Image 1 (cartoon, rainbow, N blue to C red):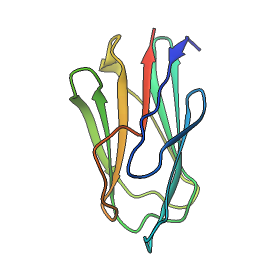
Image 2: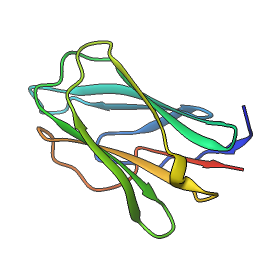
Image 3: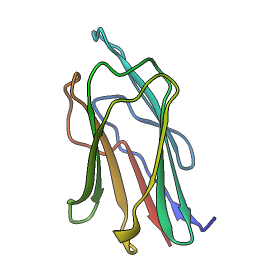
Image 4: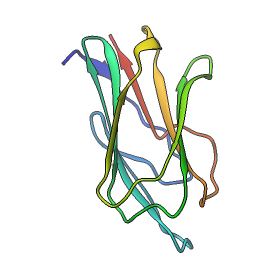
Length: 123
């Protein structure tokens, strides 16, 4: 695996960087359907990879998963999905170039700010 630089930003869903390239997101305060997930980031052959792991129960609705170029805020991709308990979703972003990317997961059943849950930059 190639070297990568990682940083986390706080979100409305309490994203926390727990290790290099590993983030946890939990929201349960006042929600009847909390979210609990882990996001792993890595570089392989200079290409950024994201792994979203649902650590909680089945999501009660769709969540939009978006990837942006951090510096320009240009959205590169978006996908909506519902994950069941323990399900993992893996993907790579080929059109990243050398830019730092941010991943944002926006559950339809939770309200929050549009900040990144995880970031990755491949050298």
